[in-house]
Length: 249
Image 1 (tube, rainbow, N blue to C red):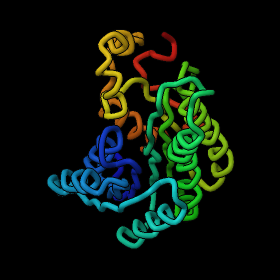
Image 2 (cartoon, rainbow, N blue to C red):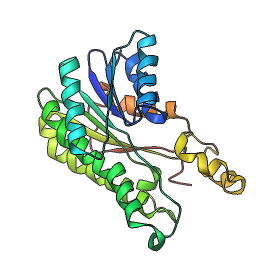
Image 3 (cartoon, rainbow, N blue to C red):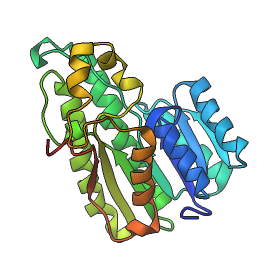
């Protein structure tokens, strides 16, 4: 098993890409700490893991708050003895409006949840990871690599994730910590439910890539698993597109 004996934290692990990644990590031998603000969904992920005899723990976490992330890392080490892998996955979408019409409070919400959370996760995980080396995988987006109308805050945050990933890879490579990102395209998760309800828009969005379909969370989880495993031992500072060819479309 590719992650046998390793301890992982997955933020936003209660659903979507986070849950799919938690389940894959467990199948590959990792102990999984599911960090999520929603207790019911986080506990459900843990139940699914334990149902298959995996090791898992739910920690209620607000990824926007420093103290909450510190508690998450502390509880992980206290329960499992160490930390080997951090997956910064938690994120939110935004209202589709012109930048000048976006409320300042929503800008702050999106930047704090989608970018500041990455900074906080690494800030408090790195002191544990340096003890024996480890891996960080940050979840960016296709919209972190290309601009799109009406999502200014989301574009800015996810673009920031890509450069913050490169920065951390340079800073911590000497400590045997690899830091990479994935950039999913349109994936079948709760974040796209609004698009699905707009038949005219959905007919375009759902086919806006080379493969002419949307992805599923398991396909992104496979990419995250690869980057977290020893198969990617000489990869750091990279952003892996998992978008069906959306970037080149």
